[in-house]
Image 1: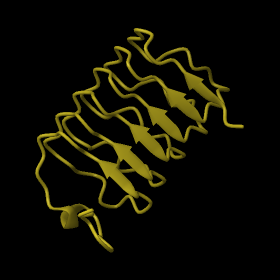
Image 2: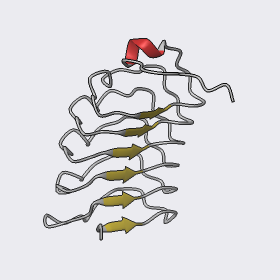
Image 3: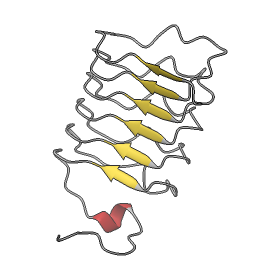
Image 4: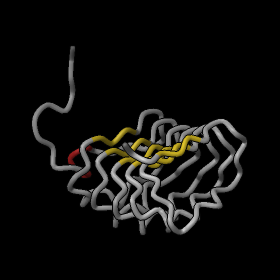
Length: 140
């Protein structure tokens, strides 16, 4: 079974005290007061990072998390997707309900299957970000 830590809705302001031998695979810190993604370098096995409904404005502190497959940052104040360029295993990115005005650094994420950016300030052409295959719009 995956090692996971769920500390949602606890008024946490800072990510800290994750020791060097931490085997967390899934970390859930939604609905807190976190402003900065930091102190995660010791999470060598992390696959899922969930930080929705916090106060994060910049994606930083994740570039060394090479095992990361999913990152959930909905309902923050993120303005750009930069900072994810080196995360080659990313499959899911959730930026719903943010303040995105720039989408960059994700075009070469070959494993990315889901990019969610509903209710943002960005306007872009899907083909400029991804190699599109099949139907883009489902009219059902």
